[in-house]
Image (cartoon, rainbow, N blue to C red; front, side, top):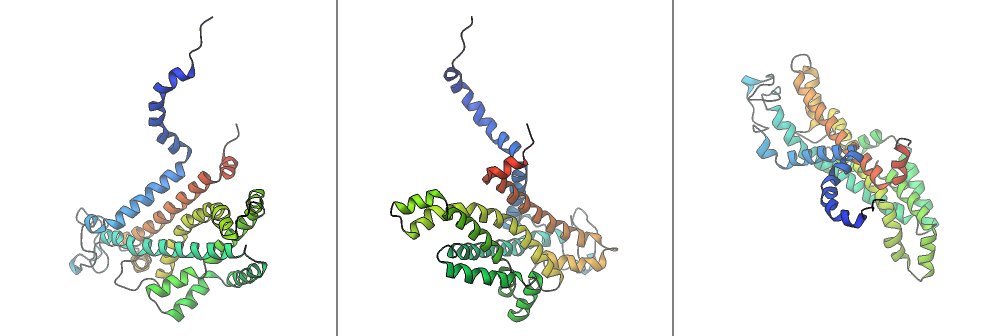
Length: 300
């Protein structure tokens, strides 16, 4: 009878091969996360290195070349003022993506603070939940339009118009997860050992809430990109001369039959950026929530 080879004798030689295949196994198990993260990284690099990657000055006008079709000199053509569309798309990553990230982070922090405050006392819980109900009663677009009308069409006004309608849903999720964790046995055991409220909040509740808020934040960036572009289409986006994708889209729509590249490139940039963060957020959710990942897995 042949002797079996001990696993310990072969494992050292297999360890380097297993480590080399680990990234491929991770990519195969999380294709959406890898694709979304790759697109997000490409967007960030495009925005950071726009002065190097842009073939032309985004504000340089050449009326002799207005509405030119894509060519080797102008890869995505020119707009109605003869400006390079590819350069404006690259430079448009900065204001659009930067504002979307800042607004999403602000919304998440406000929602996290409000949701955790609801676990402190029933009085605060009732007060904040009625406040969120009041915000949910108004459509987000209507509330954003009112805020811009009051605060003015500026970077501050646009940020406020996106933050105020967005924080209640983060607060609801943070409150639900925090209250569920606070009722758990490990929190009761920690409290029985003499831990204070601040310690329980920092070591027991926040670690439970952060994965859910982080997933919502990542997906929410894509929604904020669409919202910024939508306000730009309405003429309420970032003021000129900022190369904002929504403004580029609305300027290209009347010329769709003559110069379709203007509207199509701006629309494609909006869709691609939103898709990147949506894929990354959903992949992050499957990675951090094993129950969701098992629910979406095929049956054996």
